[in-house]
Length: 267
Image (tube, rainbow, N blue to C red; front, side, top):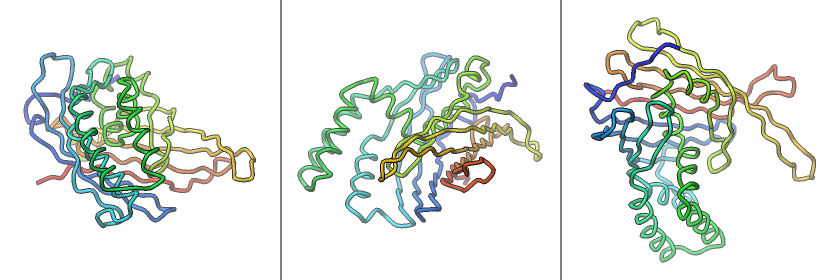
């Protein structure tokens, strides 16, 4: 398989800020926030080390207003910055500052309990506690549920043939606060017409089984298409487009369910 050639040296070592928008057309809902990535010094050449910070969170163009939205955003931002290492060979993600994240969460938890009440609150906090007490659960939560990291980490080692086979699966969130689906599909590499970037694309399918309020089984089929635009000069990711569609029963019609856009904020 052709090598993309993302590198940890040279121009790509500068701090980069990306703006991510997540749109749900059916619910007329749009989330927008910025993620800043700072490459950190590494001890081993076989990995990338990156510091992620998150800021400027907006829902439908405004700062969060409802209790649940404010709570979710406040707690989510308590987890940043996240110090991650991504293995060049197998794409495995390692969290380097898990203890600092736990300490920030404990401080945030005290603040939330002091300032808020409600039936929703304790179960929410208990779920967060259970995740952070278990290193494996914590790692899975970050790797699967943080949209940006999940999408962004894929191309770093896509040139490895073993990883290419392994990453024929990609997790995409199904709802604003809901489950994530694991899509099975195919990655393809191509050249862009402008000659300045490489295109890595993914096309996959997923099935969700559920029970309707009346107790009947329901099967929903989804398709997701992801495009990565990778700068040849900078040797890093510039933009990511990820669209998820709900398919008709015969699979012939597609209805846009979710649209994700991640753009490098160029100066």
